[in-house]
Image (cartoon, rainbow, N blue to C red; front, side, top):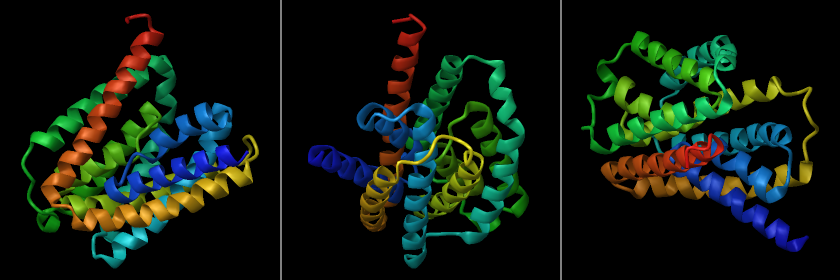
Length: 252
């Protein structure tokens, strides 16, 4: 029992650290951890993940706000349009098998990671209109609804490459968008499996500490190094997804 609690604390801390430092990695780490380590069903894990990631993202966002690395205007426009687009495009995912969707998502992550790692820092957001921000949010929301997974792995690159935010500000702004999406998703799962309050409390408590530390670390890292770290994280997870789903299809 004590060993499981310690494992839950470490996992929660790692999830919060990822969110605070990189503005992403929450859902894609939380759901597998709850299923394979804690032993929850996938349905219960998804609901619990929305609470855990939402809470951690919110505290990380306020930490970034205190550091001046959060753009509320962009977050609300990007997130609001994205939520609507994700809702409207959610039914499209039924057109393809789940393994094919995950392979498409992994390939998209590889492209995004390479663009983040190799591409130059774009022009800053001062010259970008709210229409560009809304269109970017709509594009990411559509992909999120269609692929079933999104989070910071799509939001942060879009904020950097399309909206023109500096990487540190993109990380902080992404956390607000993730919190908004988590709330919307949780409301849609209210009739789902009941939450394990103890597991959620442990993950959230440890995750808040990790999110605070991650936000502080993001402030100390050079922007170029932070971009490359994010890109590497995305590519590594993409390769894992590609191998896992290729094995399910019998390709490996």
